[in-house]
Amino acid sequence: MKDSTELIQFKGNFNQVNDKAVEMLNPPIYSGSTVVFDNYEDLSMANAGKYQGVCYGTDRLPTQRAFEEALNCLEGSTLTRAFQSGINAIQHALMAFTRAGDHILVVDNVYGPTARFCSKILSRYHIETTYVPSNIGADIENFIRSNTRLIFLESPGSNTFEIQDIPAITKLARSKDIITMLDNTWATPIYLKPLELDVDISIQSVTKYISGHSDLLMGAVSVNSIYAEQFDEYYRTMEIYASAHDSYLALRGLKTLGVRLKQHQQSALTIAQWLQTQDHVAQVIHPALAEHPQHSLWQRDFKGASGLFAFTLRAEITEQQIGQFIDSLQLFAVGYSWGGFKSLITAGKYRRNTASHYADTIIIRLNIGLEDYDDLITDLKQGFSLFKP
Ligand SMILES: *Cc1c(COP(=O)(O)O)cnc(C)c1O
Image 1 (tube, rainbow, N blue to C red):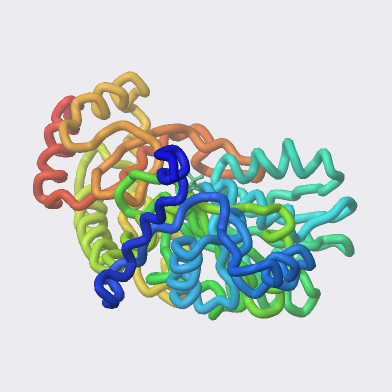
Image 2: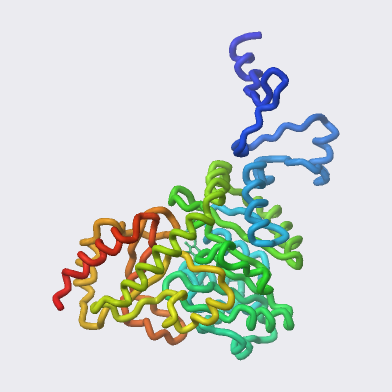
């Protein structure tokens, strides 16, 4: 055999050494396109769409399947599928369950790009979106039409943190055969299990807490038994897949999700309570604080609070001063996304389609990371010292 052939023929499979299987604690990373069949019969089965094994790289390779199954157990769903990003997961979930002529309801505190997708893309396919108030409950009935197919919730919203009355909405939706979806990125399935509240589909930006280290983009859609088959067929038809390396990292992230969230929760709540005592602070917006307008809903439905919350400063503090405050911080990096080990800060105005009392207020959002909270408070304190009393 010539060198060139020998190199191609070489099989680098060392998952068995001296007849002993090499069994790792963590699953191997299966990545690539071609999956080799045993024989012609298996190929024929695959051609006929009847092969029971994995046919191809887009057919959910084992590392992706391992991640999906782990999250599926946590969400208590029938089927979980992974996506290249959170927004990708949201877009596909919306497309899988709508068709021309449908009307959908979307809460107004929804992740910005979700609203943009509904307004700019779904509208092209004659799917009409109505935005409903972010603190909606049973009164969602007033917005339902004969062609309302789907309700999309995000609770709490990741900028303004309003909470919806999920059981009141799902009770109504079930009675009218309307699908409910919930972006569960803030709570993760550790602190909220939407399917237990009769939400049909729970969506995660895995990019945030689940992966937890700001080193990948990924999303997931977890579906109950009513809609699992329909979503499975959509996913297979679209030949969506997630990166094997990212699936591996996300699976690793899941192992420490519980302990990380405990720390995020404790640090964020401590800092939120400290902020409430500060003269320059107008309002602290955190669902676990008694002052939050939907605190009782949070207490009833959620098992905990994660590390993302917001606050506003007194009206006399100018935007320029807010900028100086943010730039003075040493431990908070300025950047999008959240759920990772590093504390981050963003600020902006959140104008919405329905009335919002935050419309003209700059909301400062903190992602509390895994630093010691005393150091984070010291940093915020030196930032506030820029403001004259
Ligand atoms: C970040 C985020 C998304 C989108 O996730 P990506 O993985 O960044 O695309 C969706 N929903 C919420 C609430 C988010 O914060």
